[in-house]
Image 1 (cartoon, rainbow, N blue to C red):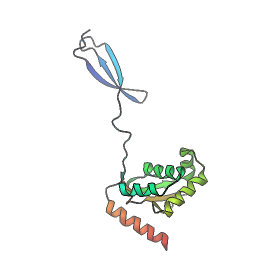
Image 2 (image 1 turned 30 degrees about the vertical axis):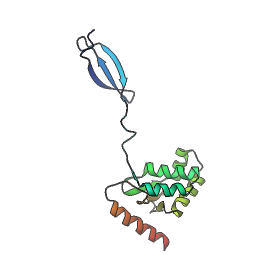
Image 3 (image 1 turned 180 degrees about the vertical axis):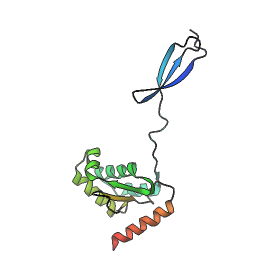
Image 4 (image 1 turned 120 degrees about the horizontal axis):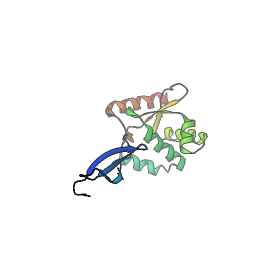
Length: 153
């Protein structure tokens, strides 16, 4: 077999990507290697280091930190998240009551602000001075401040 001119063919097996390497002359398969992901996913969020350092000093409990990280991971563009507390509790493996308490703490510390309801679920907006997802950060800041002021009335 001549392995000096291998042919690499991308293939999908069981939802995973592989590269099949074949002999350049005979076409025999000489190897199959999984492709490594260059990243962990398609989503992104920009974090602000000073704010994250400040949140670390707030000494959130483990469950509060888990809820905060969950919010970071699920926030959509313009920093909104629709929350089904039961689903969040199931995914995080904590009691729903503790999710509610964690959300309350995050609201009290202005890490998030509560938005309008969507059906039976609450929505929250992530503080854009902590982290931001989207292209219109200036508008997100204005919307966040408005929601914060509305909650204080």
